[in-house]
Structure formats: C-alpha cells, structure tokens
Length: 304
Ligand code: PEP
Ligand code: MG
Image 1 (cartoon, helix red, strand yellow):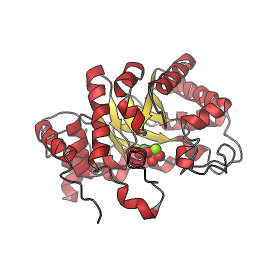
Image 2 (image 1 turned 90 degrees about the vertical axis):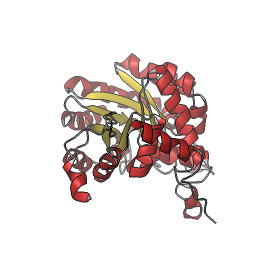
Image 3 (image 1 turned 180 degrees about the horizontal axis):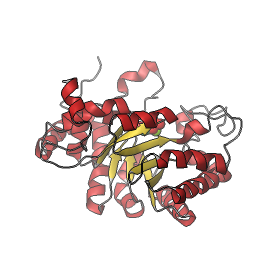
Image 4 (image 1 turned 90 degrees about the horizontal axis):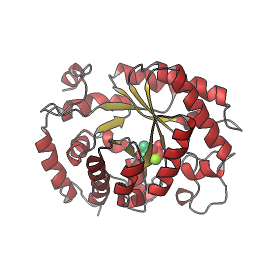
C-alpha cells in the first residue's frame, strides 16, 4: 500500500535479499532537489543542466553555472550527484546552439555533438563543474549525453579529467554504444542508460511524435537486450551502470532492470516510494528470472 511504501522512505533501495540498488533522483529544476530530499533519494542520478540555458539568448557564464552547481551539490554532502552536460538539440532545442534547418533533429546536432560544435560552451561548463566540485563535498559524477561509441566516450572522459573532474562517464542512449559496451567500459568510469532516447533510437520512433507513441516502451525486448549488453559489460569491467530514463520509475520494470544487472536507478522523486517498495519484494534470483522472461518478450504486448 502507499502507506507501507512510505514506511521504507528512510531506507536505501535494496532487493529482498539485501542486494543494494541505490535509488537516486532526476532533477530538472531547482525545486526537484527539495522533492529528492523529501522522498528519500540517496543522491541525484540525473541533473538536467538544460534549465540553466533555456530562456536565455546566450549561455550562462562560468560563474553563474558554478553557483548553480555548487547550490545543488551542497544539498547532498557525502552523496553521489550525477550532473549531465548540456543536452541541447532535438527535443531540447536552444536557439543560439541548435540549427533550425535540420530535417531530422533527433538524428542531428544534439548532446555531445552540439557541445563539440561549440567548444567554448563545453569548456565553460566543465570549468564551472570543477569549480563547484572544489567548493563542496558531494561526490560529483559528470556525464555527457548522446555518446555514440567508445571513441566519443574516451574523448569526453579524457577532456573532463584533464580539467580536473574525478569521475566521468557516458550516457547510453544510442544503440551503437550498447554494441560497443565492452570497449566503452574500458574508457568510462560509469555509464548511465537514458531509456527514453535508447528506446527512441532502438525502435526508430520519434519520442515526441504521438503517432508512433506505442513504440516508446522500454519493455520492448530489443531495448532490454541493449540494456543487457551494457549491464554485462559493466559487470565484466566492474563499471557502475545506472538507468536514468522513465523506465526506472516503473516499479515492475525496475525489478527487471535490477535483474539485468543495473546497479542504480534514478527517477522523478515522486516515483521513489513505489520503486523502493517493489524492489524489496524480490530477491536477486527472482529479479533475474523476471529479467529472463522480459528479455524473451513475455511482458511486451505489441500494439494491434
Ligand atoms: C533519456 O533519454 O532517457 C534521458 C534520461 O534523458 P532525456 O529524457 O532528458 O533525454
Ligand atoms: Mg536523453
């Protein structure tokens, strides 16, 4: 029940047998950090830095950004906070960075691709992050969105570390990175799977388009098999693999993700109670069994 789910609020996320599955919050605006704390998040698994840029005609200064990141980090002392580099483009266009004439924006300049086309924006954001990290004592992890393969992953990790960041990773949102997951695990400190985009690109169905909305489910076995490739690579290389897309907020799917070997889940704060309660009902072995059935497509119902 909802009351029972609330009872677990102060407890860390775990399966029935005690296997830890840390539960983190997605933060897309300043108030979400309040909700994250209220609902017992163990940290932040996805800070969508876009909101600092939206509504402006130019990027925020290094100082403005450093202040915003330090404000967030200072609310989670000793905790993990994953900040995502600006994800401009496609469903998150920014007028001063995103071209207006792309026929297929989801396949165009977005995420790390946009940042590489605007190196000053990339360098400024990294500088602000390093500054905020030095001023606070959360565990800052930094990741870039829309990384296609180990080459881009290595590029970003090396750049972040050269600036002074300690823990640098890749989002997994494009099927190519799942196919290259073992190589990625050799260069990245962690991977966080963005299931919203991973689903969009695995099934080639625009996530913003109502006419193909029935494709947008991570229950599709093809999406789950891509997730498994990444989780297996993580296990083999002792690399953390989180999920920060909508899939993590579905309690039944969260159990499947844990069974696939995902090591943490990040979601909208209001979903934390129900996911925490559902994970506590299954042992790792049961979650693995459920994952096996999900990989076979047992829980996926194709639209007519
Ligand atoms: C995702 O793609 O799953 C994700 C977490 O990022 P966003 O929804 O912001 O693209
Ligand atoms: Mg995404």
